[in-house]
Image (tube, rainbow, N blue to C red; front, side, top):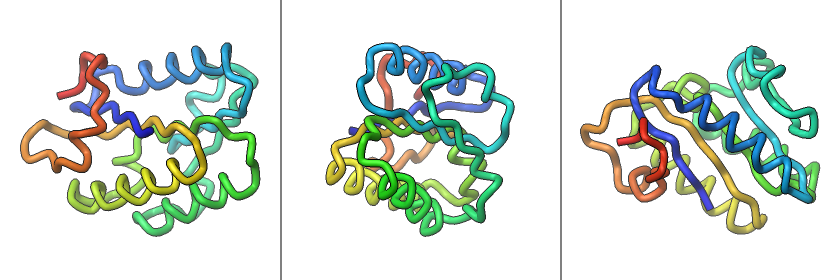
Length: 143
């Protein structure tokens, strides 16, 4: 399952992602990984959550992001969920390329039985269906 938190900058996507990760960690038997593009959230996440700063690695396009996530999953079979916060800032590309990445990530998530939570920044105009079908409908900042 992929759940996308989508909306313009400043609509609370990161807060919603942190809250969802912390809530899941309280009831999860598996491991949770949180990927962000800075260290600013490390103290907002429960200690059980494995935090990774994507800026510490050469992750700048959709292929390297896919490889990065596959590498994380290949090293730990106990991962239950991966949160990728600020994906628009980690992988700087257009929404059509981002839709391709989400399709590949969905395939990997399904094959490994994990849930992916992703935040993307942007406006509602011309949102590709591959992204739109994963929008978290209960997130008020999403389109």
